[in-house]
Image 1 (cartoon, rainbow, N blue to C red):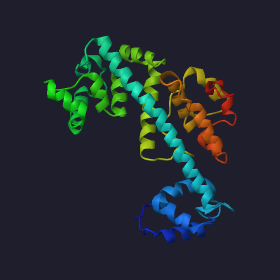
Image 2: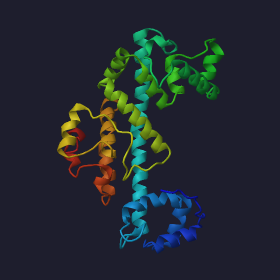
Image 3: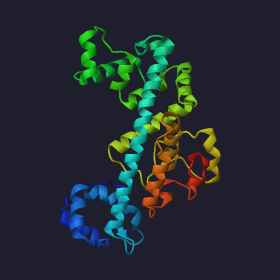
Image 4: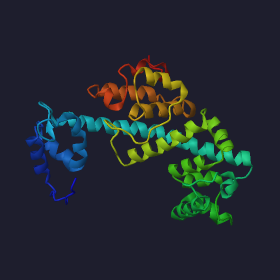
Length: 303
């Protein structure tokens, strides 16, 4: 296929509305459409149009009777779902940081364990010296934060102790550091989160990617994920019976709630997820990878 230069011009909001109407979208409230296209953006909004379009005759034509409000509700649903996801990730992330720091500092009996390459496996994708350089860079960027100013005002060490560095590193950094630890240490840390180390290693990478998606307002609704979680043994039969894959949000929701039951058992995240799906009942569960009878799976505690 021969590539071509991109020559499409930027459109005014009025032109955007006209384009949507020409494609068959029913825009009943023009002021509302102007407002949301101004503050959401046409490109982001158009991603939520895709399930309502039929490309059989001409690309991007809307199915008959589709309204601007219908598309907007998909956007609003997705935004509310991201907020719920971030609430779960925040709790899991804090617990994971603490588990890595406490587990290593106590078992090694050294709060500066991360400086010693002997505790890490050799890897093609993670170098201990590169990690320390990145840690230096992150500390320098956050040097004015109160806890670091207090530490360096009192101590002469080049690095702060483990429980401080996990606050400086990103979740991705901590996840990679965990994945690079020697097996015996990964197993010990994973036990504090009640799962096998291979599961935690997979899940924390998936959660890191999902966190980044949510932070950048990427779509969760009607999407296939490249980052796919390993399936814990207890869930395999459920997914098999319902012919489900791990490339939609449902698999990630299972991961989040499974970890939440350990680190924040009173969160009621399962009920909040159910309420959002009921509030937007027109949203097809299939677009999220949910089975129709998902609440009957006893894992969710909703039946």
